[in-house]
Length: 381
Image (cartoon, rainbow, N blue to C red; front, top):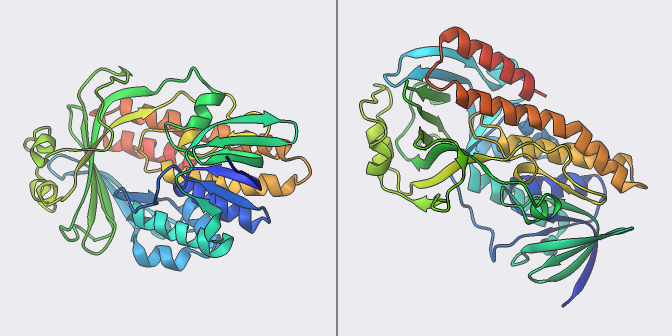
């Protein structure tokens, strides 16, 4: 087994991990990213990057690429299953935010970040087939155990997702909380709807929701959700990224007809539909310990109701780099300051998303307006 030395090791080459590598490198740190997969592939479907995250990516010099590959969302419309608008509001620059809101293919965004890391940090900065198995802390750093050998680091950042091995060691009694909601995701080459820059969130009164938004001139990303079970412990039979048929999805949405968007056509023309359980974890009172911390879904997995999980991981990366660069002689204190700034803010988002789920089927125009205003206050910065 080989031992490599580096200043900061990041577990996970997802959006949060790769953005952290870029922000930490820009702050002057030596960084290595450990990724469990043999090869980083452009998986996934769409993602909304909210203005506070887009600002970070612009600061890293990635704004032009991000703008070219995605759609600048200008409004969100909340409607019923017949397309009747209950409430709408402008988003991004149209909503007086300082930066646009960009809807983009998640895999393309990840590859853009991957290319940027390799360009600025060097091709050896990302080690694939290096799943993190655990770590051992000591006074001056961390020994990270991986499937490819041990790595010595001054700091370990666990950005290894909702099933984080780093979090599991730090917080061994920390179960996933299942909402009882099943989610189906896909992307369809169905062409634009409404303005071509509109995001919709449609509800009925029986715990069903459809979210759809364009991620290119011709591609619409969609997420269908249905409460099928009581909330509680995640069953062993839960599907994670498993393929499903269009009929299995559409069976949950009889009678849905917007007029301006053909739900049946959109779902049936989707080449790959996958299912996930909607899960989160209870917010933690602390994320890390000593020279080890968490970031993104490893730190604060949340329901994807506010299109904010990926964006929060980008903000984490920005704050982490700023905190560590302000305390170069005391990295443990820098991690504490990072957590103190982010832990309360992300807790608010996790709990806000839970509250949004509890009000399914009860939305009125006034209620949606109040919920949107409250959510903006939590996520604008």
